[in-house]
Image (cartoon, rainbow, N blue to C red; front, side, top):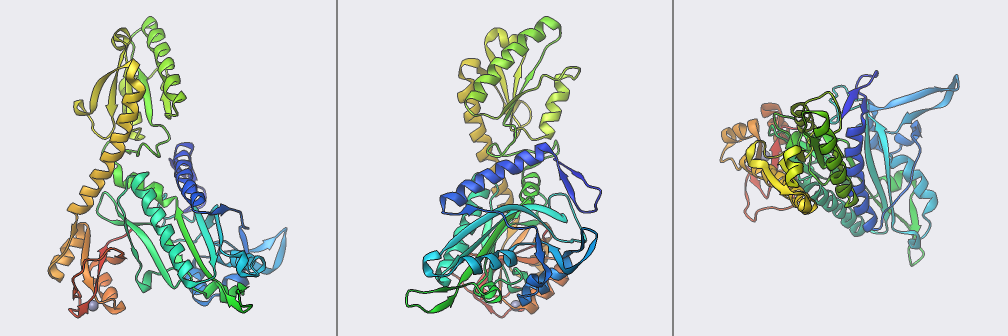
Length: 454
Ligand SMILES: [Zn+2]
């Protein structure tokens, strides 16, 4: 999937990992375009003064900036930062592009990479440079910006559930976890296979903060000059890490069929040259049939490796379906289908070659939904509603606690110090009942998801 790079904290994404990312991109891009967004590209280098214009933005990002001070052998008059995110440079462009209410809304996304000088890094989860998309929109009213913010959160949740087979909790971030410069940050939170949380995408209502910093204004219908309301939202290569950590088992990865670079692999089994010729020829024919129906299929023709080695290799890579093809299968015009999510006999079935496409299509759909169901059952089994703080401490050791919280930063800080758990989000879906804060006991209107996070 990936390799370490010569620069600490950077990663080389290898073709298999990149293809998975491309499939994620396509699944999201389709949804962005269906809701009226278009793609564009903004520069990698940003004048340092831009970052300094929005007060909380500069406070949040300063410690993580990579700065270019020399260009073409000369000291630059103004240092340039390598974008950590693009609100500022895009705000600068929007100020020039937007004149009147007729120019609104502006709905632009870009696929790019950004650099944040992180101290502790981990492949896919936290890297100095990471790949993502960042959407940036400008609207005439607060209500439109808020509905855009929530619409994009919905799109991320829909993608996570349907394509990545990952159950997520959409919710609002606490004040301390908000994006630097946002009025409100929303996220989708997922539980990994070890019970820890991973923030899997974020959507921000930026209010008029960046509009004021970059003078993004428009003339309304009455001819009055107004500041725009802006949003931004992003999902990154962290999602690859989430897929690996949610679905994997001791044998390696299990990739959800809708995103898997290879959905089915055909492994020919033979003992001698004549058997080889026979099964490989049948394999090629079946491969062509499946490929013609847009199944992402590979025929493993590698020589000098045993079928057992190939089975393990593709299991480790998480290919959802294996198609075993030996001389007896060729004679009977059948194959053996094996599901990656159900190792052993239980996941195997004999299928006639004539009905292979139907069987493969059906099995892929079954693997997709069973991965989701399994992840959901795991999350539910590891999410508790503790009765008191002692139970709360035990709950966040192994998973999530869904607890009333007064909303106070003091309790949030104490909980973090005492348990290492943070407020992952305040779920949009809330039970009716009021309660008392799990830490201080004061009345609390909302419940939050607490957990240890990556
Ligand atoms: Zn409290």
